[in-house]
Image (cartoon, rainbow, N blue to C red; front, side):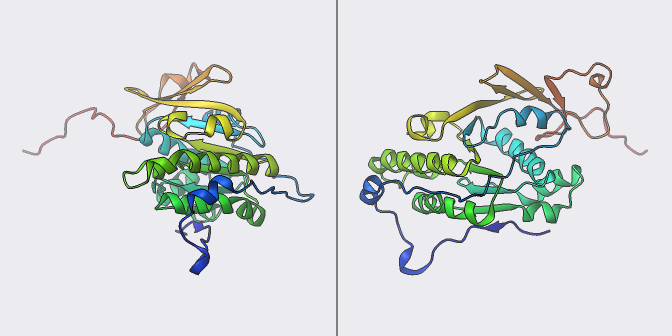
Length: 278
């Protein structure tokens, strides 16, 4: 299976820690894509999770996902597979180092897409320090111009800025600068940006005030039955319910558009005891 390609980081003397005074004082560089319309973001028609997700995005604006890492990461795998299954491309900045290519490949296979081809449509850049993440965000506009993705994803971008060794006095100014940079990228490229933050706006200072215009906020909640997605723009929700492979459910006879019964993360309860010989 192919491994997702990565955004190249600069090497040599040009690459190093982003000095906080430079980031605070540097004006935002205007980025323009000349006479090239942004490719449309599309999702499969089924399962019903995808039409529901499609209504959560808008060109040139941001969508924020808030919730615990496990359910959000599983939902991201469905999202990546859905985007590439319709011919789209994803540009992903990974701040939590939690991208699982084999899982994404299997999701894509379930939608009829070769896993290797699916992963080739995902451009992944990992960062292991906050300063590296800052450099990636500042180079993101160049990446968009070069590869023309249909969706930009900032997965836990701010998490590295809350690590114990990072200077607290630098956190706010740097994150506000990155929020402004993402706002300019969204405005100038017309791409939708998905931002994930476990702690919402509290986990990303400056995102609400200076980040991209927010189109929708989706809260991801775990429940004994599965996962609930709550969208604030339409006051809509969708329940993703556990069901083992091969098991049929009542929703086939009375479908509920607010519920999606699908294979989901986590073990299932055993339905019987193992037989013993003798």
